[in-house]
Image (cartoon, rainbow, N blue to C red):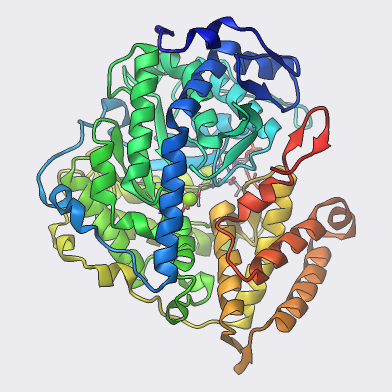
Length: 568
Ligand SMILES: CC(=O)SCCNC(=O)CCNC(=O)[C@H](O)C(C)(C)COP(=O)(O)OP(=O)(O)OC[C@H]1O[C@@H](n2cnc3c(N)ncnc32)[C@H](O)[C@@H]1OP(=O)(O)O
Ligand SMILES: O=CC(=O)O
Ligand SMILES: [Mg+2]
């Protein structure tokens, strides 16, 4: 670890204790004490997190206020678009720092929560990269977060193992493993188990800070060939947020005494406003960038959220909003063009299909959908793609390898200059398709079950043969809200049915009965389905759309010690 000279004397010298943890001044740990957690939450690591929090909290607050201001503009009828003030960045020629050799080839990346067995399986999966997730795929309760940090440290050290006692199977790392990327939470989420100067810490600074502090040296030695650690950055809406990340990286590099540009990150373009900021985001992160990724599920969620006050832009059924819709294809094409022009990877997104073990025919159909989606991506010029499950990796790998051959990526070979002319209208074009009662029912059934899982600690789950996570659940929630708000007419077996609260109430009741039948009475009683139903129903019928499903739900998973259920 490099010099700690940048921290204030008082932080270093004054002693403090917080429910068993040895903490620097101003830091209060309110989560459960555990000896293993205490090794992660040691005083030096907390000092680093506190330094990041103190340095950047006002920048973060300002950025969140700018998000609210943009929302006000969209709610008054404004549309997101390219910023005339930064035209010079879009028009001028510049490139990002060269791609580190360790991650030149990213043709298939697997993602998953920071759960111990899954980390080992993902690293051994044959994918080029594993994105370990503190975000869409994780329910951020204290145990998951702290165990996730322990698991990642063991993974980077190469010592991680897991004993499945039921199956008497021991999991260990293979000789050859995927390269590790870590995705911290979005800027909007607090970490209510760690208070700094009387305020909850910023979730992503905790995720980033603890992981970086404990792993940067080992990572660069064992994984990054001198570079790293590597990150994915979610849910940004503007380049000013990327600028904060860039400054966080610079501060971390300085603290660690490592070269500027060692840390690298891929930004998910998964909000509608961000698609107009892709050059600007890369520009801010140009010394730390390894590309952009099409976070297609949050992007769809963001389309609804951004246009919450625009009844002329209602979405069709969720299953119809695929990558072949004009606005989605334009987004992917422009992302490829932007990344390749700037010399970095243009990563594709997640197909939500997962293997269907008990039905070979249905499994083949699902696999074929994945192949088709990946073929579209590689032919469009994407340099790699995401898989949600190890069972999909061979198919994804085959499609990308057949089309990219031995080249590690298509950064130089697929310029996509044709996409230079894509306009604001292309990127905002209204999606086409029908809205149905079955769509409303499916949203409700999936949204409630996902939330019930999230409240009990699972952030990604299989539902009806698809992967569901926070991003896909958000689509279900905001789509219901939108249809209710504007009293949309849905197609119900050929008959027009207008959505209102009463109809929705009936749908919720019937879908809860169906869920109970499907999961069984015992599991239904033990689970948190009723709480999830209440929360989901409130969010779908609220007069004003909640910004995030997980912000409200977070209050229910915060447990302060001594044990008490706490509200922020
Ligand atoms: C919109 C977005 O942000 S996408 C990115 C965020 N979302 C994700 O990362 C979702 C990742 N995927 C998953 O979490 C899982 O695949 C799920 C929850 C959808 C399904 O998981 P399961 O029900 O466990 O699947 P299944 O029973 O078929 O698993 C078979 C094996 O594959 C493993 N596995 C499944 N998915 C993954 C994964 N993503 N990474 C590593 N291992 C995995 C399981 O651990 C299991 O291992 P085992 O045989 O050693 O016990
Ligand atoms: O994070 C990915 C997404 O699609 O959302
Ligand atoms: Mg996402």
